[in-house]
Length: 429
Image 1 (spheres, one colour):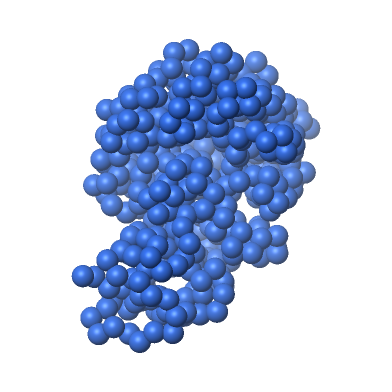
Image 2 (tube, helix red, strand yellow):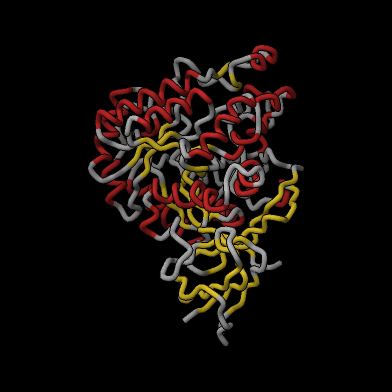
């Protein structure tokens, strides 16, 4: 029998309390005596939150182990306070078969730092034409429930309809990269507006996002199935999400930390670290995203952690790879822009970074996103809201260094992460 005794933790920001964790489960909460044989973790002044869950992580294995592996990505996730991540399907080969999904699952289990849940491709090879093995992936040991061609939009409405109909039978969800390819083609890399015109960069108009969200909402209503909007970025997109929810459509949405803080003005120096898909947007869109996250229109924060090798990023802006790191800094960014500004409290942060993403992905059945209560699995994150940390890309757990936060200082740091009561990160103060 293993016992971990956590002293003085502020559960969801409340008064300090002790927690006794026995064999991976919260056994007691309150003012407790220290058990004789327990390992003690001092959490005085720290806030205890349910372990974070990331709906949108690129781990690159198999195929690009030079940029990230499931082991290095798991370490980065644990350092960021995550106890579960969903590994996106755009690997090489693509995760579009049961065997491929099980391989990702097994590699994650071998690391044991976070629960790695594979996301299955919607279409074979991400080609957007023929459905992948959705049913076989779900019935496999990996129990895939979320499917996405992320990086590419499922642009064919008939294919999207068939996918929604197929996953409805087992409670699956299609996560859509909402980018109409006719309105924002593969070269689009900057929000269409004054900045893109001045810099001469191919424009990505807001309507390219909102029209796909609207179409997929209608398809979800028609099929009685579930659709999830990946990385919503625009005020127009938010309005469509709000309409769909008001209409009772089974639609959920996520926003990334970088879209909650960074704006398209950062592109004026053509720095490719800020090249991401969807692109950074103007300040008015950032404000709309913050308001939508606070009022529940947007359900969850998801990192879209996208590691890249130096040789893939160090190009002219239009030729550089899309994407930036996000796992280790997600909490700090959300805490800075949402909690410290008073727009969200600790319970709301737990909702968008743990409870809602776990529910969307079906990981609540494994105890993720649960309550901090006796009898619950001890998936926990301990954070110091007063710590001031300056991001140094060279100390990242990730194998890549395309970190947009390098040199920035944030209030708030993850101190320890516990997966089933075992420390997967930190603990020293």
